[in-house]
View 1: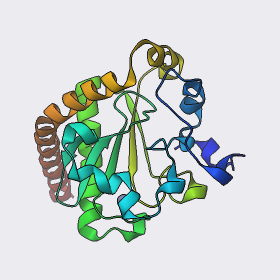
View 2: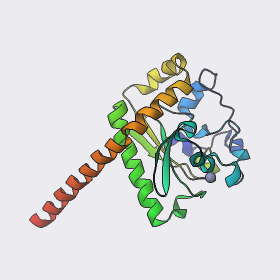
View 3: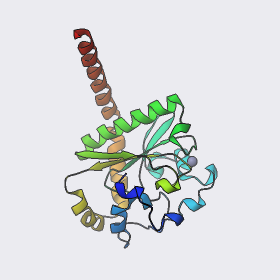
View 4: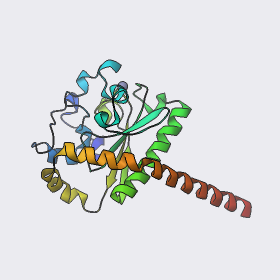
Length: 213
Ligand SMILES: [Zn+2]
């Protein structure tokens, strides 16, 4: 997601996640090297197949337990356990596939749609002013869990690089994540309506522009 991810990191050779909850000495490093984030503490070295994959296991548990905010037909959306910013979402296909090119047309369409609605919901819930979207693919691409494709949606706020370290120290991550999950999950249906309305308006404008030519 950032330029520094294209530069080989000395520790990329062994991307094991030593991160605990915020409040550990890792939190500052995590802000500036998000490619080192991993979804589970045990790290991707132990994600060998679907049975050990947290993105495969997530949907079988409750939304609360798995920090899921929305479930689609082919893909779902969850909170990142190690957020770069508050509200950091992940969009995953249900299928255990590593690469963007592995997605079917239907999966790709919903993957994109859920990413778009994720942006809308973050704008509504947390007044996000900007976003970083992206997929780190493959271990050398910086993926925390390379075996299961996931797209990051990171909301950005003016000056967030300055105050996030302070926020991270003032509130327990688990509480923040549970609260954010609830807010986002509750708003998701309305955000979807807003998105669909916006799409229909955009479509009309496009049609009108086509007709005027
Ligand atoms: Zn998986």
